[in-house]
Length: 474
Image (cartoon, rainbow, N blue to C red; front, side):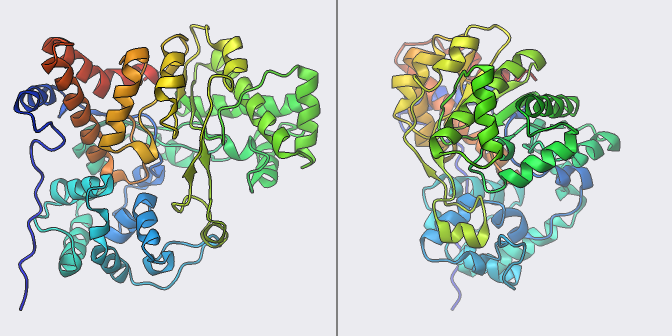
């Protein structure tokens, strides 16, 4: 006896209030933003997709393997990464048929009920692929065959999807060691889609990064600078930043364990750097060095105009055994308590009042929203708050972000939304969720007579479209 699959539907009022007054206002607001072009100024999609414009192979390669949100949850419930065919650190992978890996995923899809991942994925299944039955063990092969067949058609090539999703701009994130070949190929192809890069120097900034010694050597080879001297090291950064800017970059990005900054004298910085290159630093000295480099990056931003992003407060690769077997970005990163007021003061003392400098702050520590981040951004002209990030880019997290930052920071000291994802097909879903939550939040303010509806319309459009363009100088 076969069971009829449950239908897959997306309700038009999802994420809007159950209160009829607020819901009606939210609908009207959403009508102004639902179809606006997507600005995706910070993310981790692969530029080779847009350079080569080749067909994606199957749903496992496209939707499962790049998405650490997905296999993090599966791993927590006892599903091994080998069973999913996740590549290992040495480049090998278990011999798993991608269809079988998809079946494992489908049979565990109930684990995602109520999570943002289920919202994003169901949006992809319903709106992108036109599926109308829910994903489950019984529909696994239906999904696999339907999606695989669609991916072989011209309408599902990366560039066609980029245009279909109404993406005006997408930024990828590359290390200083990346030759940006794919970005060059995109430019040379004549395709009009705008794909830019962002400068992420972590491997040559963090002495505790496992790749640091090799990365520093490659940094010198690429730039021709003596990167084992402090002055040469800084010149190498300036050179690579200039090249990234020539390839469209408008921002830098820094993923540090904390928000610590420093303002050492040249002599002090030189002595510290000499210890760094000899691999002779304590944990405290490594932290001081990262903090000094952040301040140096801020100084460079004044010269070259690149907007600076800081994503601190994450304990990377917490699961040592998983890291040793599979490497980075496998769902084992954990939020940390993060302090900003004291940590940022050295940098802000130098650059917080500079009209040509912009620092976009993110956090995984929600306790800092109203206590530290909103007051800082509500005062310093150079500071803006990035959206609810990573573990908090769920409807509840987005709502908490707005609630806790509005009184001290307002809407206009924030930067709108960025999706920060490797999962290309989820980008429209993520932006739609953010737009719906903001409309619901604004509708509540209107219903409580704290804002007029015409003002809410303008704010909704600003959050969805204008503020990211302003914040990232697009």
